[in-house]
Image (cartoon, rainbow, N blue to C red; front, side, top):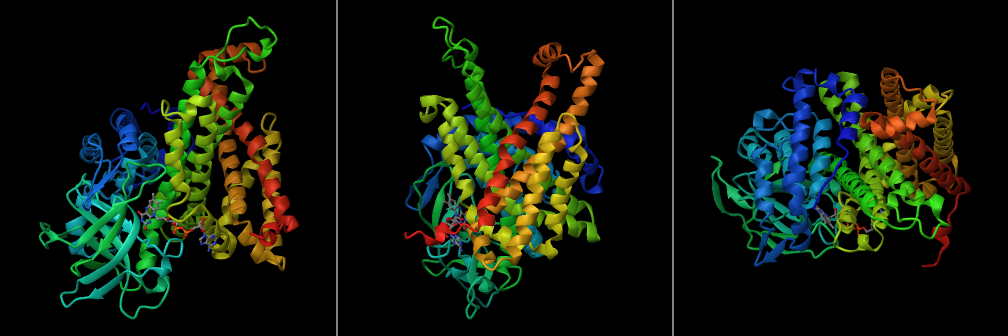
Length: 613
Ligand SMILES: Cc1cc2nc3c(=O)[nH]c(=O)nc-3n(C[C@H](O)[C@H](O)[C@H](O)COP(=O)(O)OP(=O)(O)OC[C@H]3O[C@@H](n4cnc5c(N)ncnc54)[C@H](O)[C@@H]3O)c2cc1C
């Protein structure tokens, strides 16, 4: 399966839009400069295209197989995973002290877009392994760090996060898995977890599970949960492997997509011999787990965005090849030749909308990743400010990027006509694989509730005001602009609507119910405003660069014929030109949805609560 990505846009967003070069001057990233980061990006893309993408179809068609407690993955996954381990890609953003590459988060996000886009199933294993390693590095004891962290960052061992139980999905506090302290300080773990990604497989010799469990007498709900490090095979103090640890994989799910990622049912302690170490303190498990989940939520949003972007690239390539129907200017000429479908206005609209959402979600994820880097590169109040931005943006990254990633994959599938529905092209696998990003790590509905209930009011609403203030600054910058004035005013209107709605909701007597009912639209409104702000901000950068190219070549942008001939002939100029057009398109097509949602919210439309179901 081919995998294509718009590397030009990735590098534009990293180096021409975000101040990544300045970030690299920070002592934390002293080993890195723009040149070697670009080499990492190029190498990462090469691996995605040449190593991971060719195994993506095996993941889908052969998938994970379960037999007698053991799980095997397609043969082609093993050398591909080995390549990731040997190149240090598992620990790309992690601490070099434990074998990580130590790259900034924002660069990791760029590379992980390639990996998820090329083979989401295999890359999921990597995500959780890196996450488990990071948790032990931050919250573990010195002994735990020395035993586990390097093995996880190198990918030699795998990692999981075990929250879900049959009765405890969104309601994690309903977990029943037990942990009882033993004289030697370890805990006996017993219980069943379901839907555990990569809970067992044959890519690694050991798997380190992070398990939420309840100690005797612990209070009900999430406050009673503690977190445990539970290896598949027990690890001795010197790091050598001991006995199997009474962790059994009782089966895997047959599911819609990501067939190459085993979704396992795990039984801990069926023979009462499953041991684990406490991570952090008792009863603090959920707080710790949130640390892992928040990082994973951004990467889950990235999965949606990556597969959307990959779907768009594949659909553009198909639309350039597929001949069908006459050119729209010749539709009455029965003998006119068929043209590539990319000539048809409707197909162009779909491809431009999908491009706009792919770039807007990429921008959101990169911007948030950059803020994460700034929490490491700064201290005091500044650090707190960046952390508050990350907190507010995390549910938007997860839910908005995954929602639109799936929508993009869906609209791009239709570009293929009937072929999109067949397995001859990757479109249907992209769509099936992307859908899970809307569900796990907390459904998008739950993300929206978190956003309206916790993130909007965070610190008295200061972080969200500051983030939307940046969008306001884009409006102010462009409100008198000859080319971008109208899109800017649409952004200004959306911002005003958002502001009014938020104020009104806090005052109305039915405000709480309306907020719960409209949490998803409210999150979408903010995501759309931020997306428009990012794309317009990028359009300004692009216009300056394009202006310089045109001036250099002596091209008059007002002379449309000469200008378009030049754009069609010059890839750099075409890239910048497209950035401007994409921002305009997004403003006209996406921003009006903010007003549409607002109308229902202001009217207090409560039909869903009245419908008899
Ligand atoms: C492929 C796959 C991989 C997974 N990997 C992991 C993993 O590695 N580790 C792990 O621990 N879990 C994992 N999960 C579990 C996943 O995180 C849960 O499925 C998800 O959180 C939803 O829980 P649930 O399925 O029980 O749905 P439920 O909680 O039953 O939710 C059903 C519906 O009700 C809605 N809902 C629930 N409560 C509310 C509420 N208060 N207000 C409004 N709406 C509500 C939800 O939004 C959803 O639409 C995985 C799941 C899948 C399918």
